[in-house]
Image 1 (cartoon, rainbow, N blue to C red):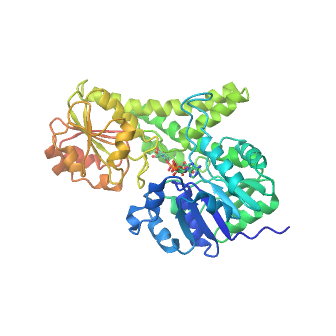
Image 2: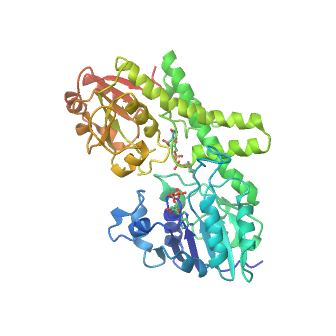
Image 3: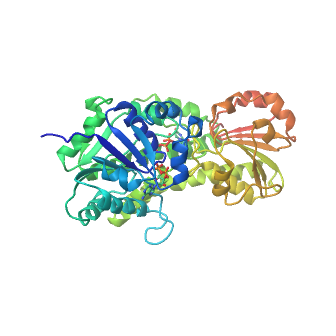
Amino acid sequence: MDAPTIRSICCIGAGYVGGPTMAVVADRCPHIQVTVVDLNEERIGAWNSADLSLLPIYEPGLDEVVGRARGRNLHFTTSVEGAIATADMVFISVNTPTKTHGVGAGQASDLKWIEASARMLAKAATGHTIVVEKSTLPVRTAQAVKSILEAGPAGKSFAVLSNPEFLAEGSAIRDLENPDRVLIGGESQEAIEALAGIYGHWVAPEKILRTNLWSSELSKLTANAFLAQRISSINSIAALCEATGADVREVANAIGADSRIGPKFLTAGPGFGGSCFQKDILNLVYLCRYYGLEDVASYWEQVVTLNTWQQHRISRLMVNRLFGTISGKRIAVLGFAFKADTNDTRESPAIQVCLDLLEEGACLAIVDPKVREGQISIDLGKPAGQGEGNWQLVDSVEAAAEGADALVLLTEWQQFAQINWPAVAALMRQPAWLFDSRAKADGAAARAAGLNVWTLGEG
Ligand code: UDX
Ligand code: ADP
């Protein structure tokens, strides 16, 4: 069987997945023209900025990869139709957030952007086109995409593949360059081999797994559900450690040494965030309910319930330690991104914790090295302001600590491990607290500087 030669790729969606993935494909396959398209002109403008520090996404190493390939065989444009027409292979990498209204609201994914992409493809594609689903999707979405493509104008043909992305933000370039595995699901062997051939330029053959369409789609949801489940499991034990005098890091080390459990993804924290985990579990729950598997649905739903509980637990505990009221008190919030090394705030636990603290009347001084003020306004539902129940963004831990009763560390940025505690403690109103939900700060140094310290999972 001869796999078609791919000379030209188009990717619909220049977001956290499409942008970095296509940058690495272009970098590793200089003989393929890669065009990333998006309807969002501002985003495309940022991808094309001469100053590589202004790319729309912050990812370590991304600027170098884009710098090498852009203008050579990597292009960013808003001309969606033109790029589709000339492509041998089109990746769909658009957003699929959880539906906010209608059937399946709060659980099912909103597929309107996928559907719009499929309709655009049916219209603009020419000849034979291999369509690759990259977005995280509910199982059997490929079928919907196929139906739309088949209903389009005659004279064109399509093969649909599922190729879920497993990169984690903050380590996207490393994950793309050296993946644990690449998963390709599909019916057309020629199309599967054409895509495998692209990855084969830098990924070892034994790491490229081939499955049917549905296994590929379900594997993505399952991988994320298992990973998130580990986090909820360790977070539940963290609460028990605090109550009993155990230390969750010691427990994690001890259980992680069992090769059947393994050491990764056992870091207790303020709960998982990011665009995938919650959305994918809710998708799984929705699917199980749809197929009448109520017990399976409620089993997985509990992973999300515990995650939300963990976020509220932190804010409740803070109010309690600060003499039952934080109304009018200044609280420094260290970190707003959902994890370190990204500017992404989607589902960040910091959002819920901040909303709880604002509701109690606190004045928040937020510091994050990469998140912009406009994004925080959107996430907290109001612009920056002064006084009770308001927030502002400041540019250093010292500025945030000035006159504060407490600091709460929510994102594990490396710079928060190197705080000058005597200097910071001297700026705060006493008695002052450090609430460290990531066990990232030097707790002993903060205590020595006179602060009361609460570290998540430490009894
Ligand atoms: C995740 C999956 O890891 C990735 O394979 C998939 O493609 C997309 O979803 P991402 O959300 O980018 O990636 O980051 P990840 O490193 O998985 O972290 C998710 C959340 O879990 C973060 O909020 C992180 O702080 C939290 N986390 C992670 C923990 O609280 N403890 C851990 O041990 C690991
Ligand atoms: P992800 O994390 O999955 O990459 P993002 O929200 O970061 O999600 O990126 C998805 C991108 O897809 C957005 O920039 C959005 O503008 C783009 N997009 C959505 N629908 C379309 C479409 N029909 N055509 C082109 N781009 C689209």
